Length: 233
Image (tube, rainbow, N blue to C red):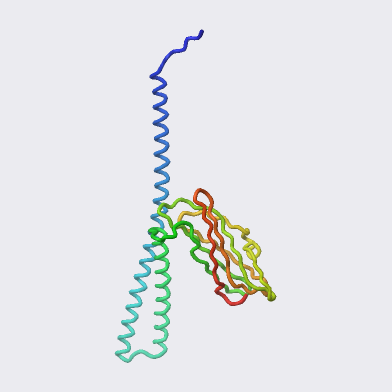
């Protein structure tokens, strides 16, 4: 027979110490996640405020230039060339204001979501071409939610059109050697997927099909088609 000391207080103290350690670890983990999230939110808010300031400055500049035009017209000191230059400048500033307004609305939508279709969103696709046969693209994915946790998954981009009078489709890896057919994403607020397409000779694109699917607890599958905004090829 072995005599074992009966020490209930010792076991109770060990158990309490374990509970205190777990509580401290949970609190530290919560504070770390909270601070990281606040830092990201502050960065987004500062960017939105910067764009808003640029918007106000552009509006003030337009107002001043319009007043200057009015003063010159009254004094008969403006000629057609100067008038055209000022008009073009005002148009450029108005385009800049429209772009800034769009960016402000975008940040508002991400930071203060009130849309009915919350969750992962295929926001927009921009394409441009300065060299024949090469097309730069930028796909914007966003997440509109009340609590911004990371969302991850994969997106597929396909280009549909005609080649030699027949229907053809190309996936992203066939046109952009830097990308796989399925591109992974992971973000909290938004993410841009950028690249350059090498267009096949004789191919006339008609539309772009984008399929995005998230993984994890809240799985979403989205499909969106964009009309090809450039000319043939």
